[in-house]
Amino acid sequence: MLLTPHSQATTPTRRRRTAAALLTSAVSVCLVAASTPAVPLGVGDRLFPHLGNPGYDVASYDLSFIYPGGNSEPLRAVTTIDAWTTADLDRVNLDFAHGTVESVEVDGDPAQFHTAGEDLVITPEDSVSDGNWMRITVRHTSDPVPAEGREGGWVRTTDGLAMANQADAAHLVFPCNDHPSDKAMFTIRVTAPDEDTVVANGLPAGVEKSGGTTTWTYRTQHPMATELAQVSIGRSTVLHRTGPHGLPVRDVVPTEYRKALEPWLEKTPAQITWMENKVGRYPFETYGLLMADATTGFELETQTLSLFERELFTEPVYPPWYVESIMVHELAHQWFGNSVSPRTWSDLWLNEGHATWYEALYAEEQADKPMRDRMKAAYGASDRWRAAGGPPAAPKAPDAGRKTSIFRPNVYDGAALVLYALRQEIGRPAFERLERAWVERYRDDTATTADFVRLASEIAGRDLDGFFQGWLYGEKTPPMPGHPDWKPQAPAQTSQTQAPATFSQTQAPAKISQTQAPVRPQASVKQARPAKAAAR
Image 1 (cartoon, rainbow, N blue to C red):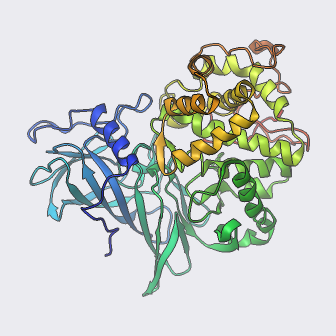
Image 2 (cartoon, rainbow, N blue to C red; image 1 turned 135 degrees about the horizontal axis):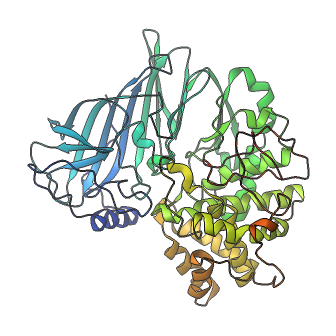
Image 3 (spheres, rainbow, N blue to C red; image 1 turned 90 degrees about the vertical axis):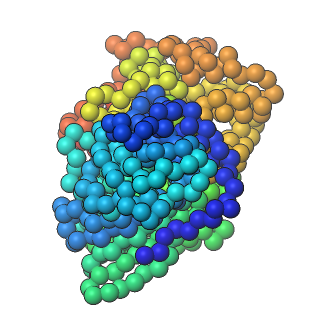
């Protein structure tokens, strides 16, 4: 079958050089002798020590799945990885933890393989030297039944499958270098029964029918982190419309809900235009919403095809302004988190803080929900959030057995509060220039908190290291510029009308009024909504 091509004459981009530097400097033990025991490796991420692997930089993934027609049976799969080596390798580690490996080849030759923790450890027949292209082909299964004690990977919908791979669950679906520092191009092909529709990241690259099945192929035109991969399989309808500058917009909806969902989907082109007016041109080749008929408790910014629960749009408990602001939250991630990706998971605040910022700004401008009120409430709760989850740029490690628990309020409204303080500190014009410069300078790249601090200082024309040190790393929230009357509140003083609160997702739904804003639960899953919880 066709594979994503590569050219050995290709010069690594800045992104590849910076990713390679991280991969090679984080761990040097990749140069192991073949006789030593297989061990799990990692790129040295503070929050996920064994995530990612050193010694190579992935250029492209070619993923092929055969869907049997039932979402409880393993899919047969072939994953082909083209990578540039950044060290001499006697072994190659991939992240893979929820499937059966049938065979592995390196540059066309059979290779031995073992498992170690959540790593697939491959021993090629001949070692691979530094500075060369390497092609790894893994034939395996991909299990849609959730792994015991793990979150993410395949999401089973009422009629098929979708993906939710954040923060470190892509390797529950396919072998990969599962860390956002190593972005790559993707070709995704899925063979499914004729009655199913398949949509994935990127643009269509072919549809072939044969013997009652259809093979759908999609390709990305921009590099993507593994956690942002998306594949939808099911009895779906694909709706097409045109966004700004002729951008193709395609939405994937359960066919039976098409009529009810269409009014919401019509809003997307105008929301893209709104974001472009704030930060510049949309960074990818297409966009759209995947409205999955599944209960997940979260929405997810998978690249070019954001994942939403269908019930967000069909349950009357959610006021329209709130639903629209959540749509903008995931849209904003296409710039912040997808195009400009975090170098490490400790840089997560750059993703979620910015998405929350534009969510709140949209609500302010389109629904008269003042940003100042939301930020004052967040300021009141900020010290408590920092105590529970760490400062925005130094989040605490995930809870045992709940890797998505890094998505706490400190990296949502707590991080948006940092951006509000920054705008207060340097002024609105400089802040708006910074936002545009950030997504332009690091487009299709990875970036760190230090990069943001450096650019902010450059735009402001003065050293902001001291400002950011307190706001990003302090145990206590610094005074808010321009608002000396704002005071952090003790936990006993913080009510649901003053700041987001911790609550259980098992509580009964509460009616959300047109003037109330639903809040996210602490230590919850990604972009969680209070569907089963209280609202402020």
